[in-house]
Length: 468
Length: 122
Image (cartoon, rainbow over all chains, first blue to last red; front, side):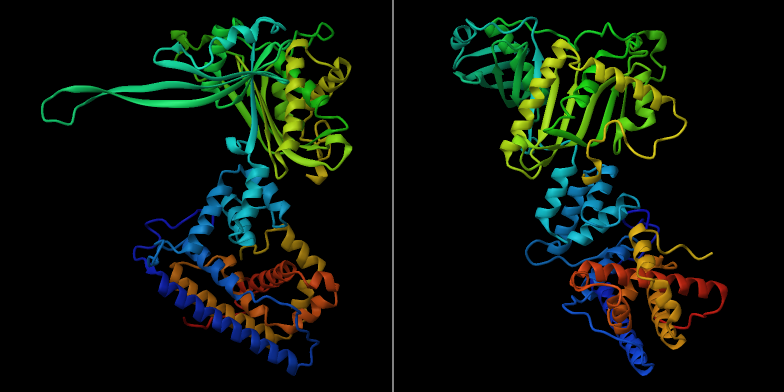
């Protein structure tokens, strides 16, 4: 059962669901009768026997499993139901599979393991197994998706984008300049505006909320018979929100995607007179080391080695590492190399990724580690600990920190999120906070990159892997 | 060569941990014949539906319905488990699937080496 669904050549004549169900019921009746016959023989032979207390009959489960297995090979036509047309049970099952199919294979394996089903096999086998175990338990399936999805939907995560400024935000004068823009708009590009809806000074800083409005415009023929044309414009409004903290060298965008965040950063630059730094700083290259690894790589390694390896936070599993390639990138527009194949970025997915040899080789070869996704254990205030998904991206002009809610109260993940933002900010401006620890880690990474084989166990970035 | 039926590590662990192969080996030939005849029927019916030899997991899934009736197997497992283990449905599902896989493996091997001849018609 390596492929999902029948092919046209498998079954030229489809069978009906009713025929299939009748066949399967007949088969399972015969199977049950065979079971009873074997039981009678056991009694006759005087073999020890026992009944199972609170046994839930397996027949329904086997019936459904068989039906699914056969439907993977044979085209089956099903009758529409009265209300929903599709059989509700089948519909729920497929929706559950669809939700889980968003997970990458390593995450799917981890999900399977976490609910006690075998983690071997291909994607289809894993989906079948998980859904068969959980049936249509929507809440449990949603929990797995939330726990293991790297690209969480916006409503299930805290997202902050840090846009760098040329100099720290002054303690005075900014709110006064911005107040004049409340309930006003400015143009930030061709057919693009930013509308300031709220500007307020709070104990956290200056909060700015607004809407980025843009239009997607095209030309088309009119509907009437004469050959005339008209412009068709689709308006798009995207909500954005920023926090401006005096003393910080970044404007924090706390809502919305990259497009509206960039527009708000531009609007704040214009309105508050806070010039942006067009490129993300990455601290300075350490004078204490001559390996010349990418400065962004060192920021993320130091983050993993200090902020994510503390009494409050421990790495559970580093599941993704993304690299932006430096070699040949600048020659992309050169006509002589326009046809030349080029790799611009590489992403590794799996478990304990930065402990793997290929990832270590990329670092040693000076490629830029720019994206990490991981599960961390967070123990706020020394109490209970919580498993939460985290992601950090270093883009060319901003950094993004994402903290998933996991299955906990939002306040728990918000606390972790704030800690990570402050640490990322500090490291981007000042560089690594633990040079000695980082130097030791760099030596381990070099050693791992030279090893002939993959290690048996993760040792460098696996804080508490066993329990994840 | 007959395909390997037990691929999952959990099923292998259940087979070995509960000595399920021993249970099968100690089972009398008459009871084994009942299971094999049931598999003949499952094989024939599903071959008709699929238009090709059915994969082992389809045979395993069919046989589980027969095995849940088997009080001799329940006694075998009871001797090796405590009450807490026995109250969990998923534990029974796992060992029944492991036994079904062991039987299907033996069945496919017997059909291949000619020691069992399929007889059932759908």
